[in-house]
Length: 177
Image (cartoon, rainbow, N blue to C red; front, side):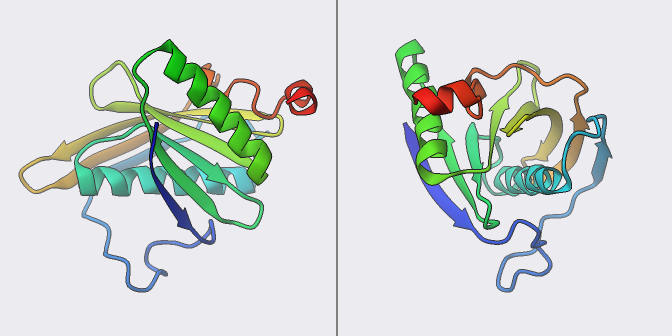
């Protein structure tokens, strides 16, 4: 069910500061709109921004957005896990496994990137204690040059319900789980 694991350090590190990492591909259009409320902390916003950069890098390297879960930890590290499911049973197992991973490893935030029903759009949904967010990502990919042609993020005023994140930081589930 989980395809790969990757661990990165320091949430606030930018690509230009990381030695030995390839330069980001050129982007012909980059636009960001923020509509999220003031309840989002700077730390959570930094995690969301880092997650969007990882998704953009994956798009540049693979040419597509893969369903992915991002687990952020209090020490600034992040684990990235691609996933897929074929039926309701596998989806239920995935939901349970995400909850278990949060409880066992002490993740402070969880974000899930999934494809949207509109072409070339994805939804990034995230949660941490008491905060839920959703970000709509519209993107373009140039297959000939293998580059990200456009990348626009819109913070939604109302978070979209994501079954994969349901109840993760709910106190009643933590006590009984």
